[in-house]
Amino acid sequence: MKYIIDTGLVFDSDERTLFLQESPDESLEIGAITARLFVEMLENVAGVERDYLLDAVWSNHGLKPSNNNLNNHISLLRKNIASIAEVDDLIITLPKKGFVVNKKYAVNVLGAEISDRPEEEDKVAKKATAMDYPATLWFLSITIVILLVLLALVVTNDYHAIFGLC
Image (cartoon, one colour):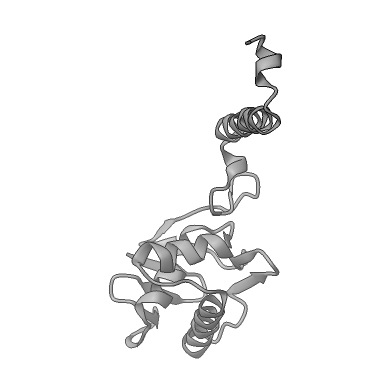
């Protein structure tokens, strides 16, 4: 799939190459991890959280994720983009959160607009947490309370008196 950024930069995710539209013969090949990282960022224009990137780019491919690896590949990606398109602000860091593609650059896929980037429609890609599943959280809380009550009864050995057993 080809991503065209309005700076004239083209990213071919199948070939893992970066090049300018006016000079496709002068391309720069990037590594598989860096390519997956760039695809995740281009497909999630509202931004991506660090944990999501670590899972999508490293863990889901059997690799060990680390913040250091993520930072190194972001730095490498920025350098590669700057060397081809002389753009140094395409990737913006959201401190302690993640990364986002600068909204001043439109991103197209094979000539079709990915998004007009309305703020209210974009959702940041993030790792699912327990708070995303309230029913599961509620069930887990009730189960823990019941287990604690039963444990307290067994420890105090007063369950005969409580339940009216001899």
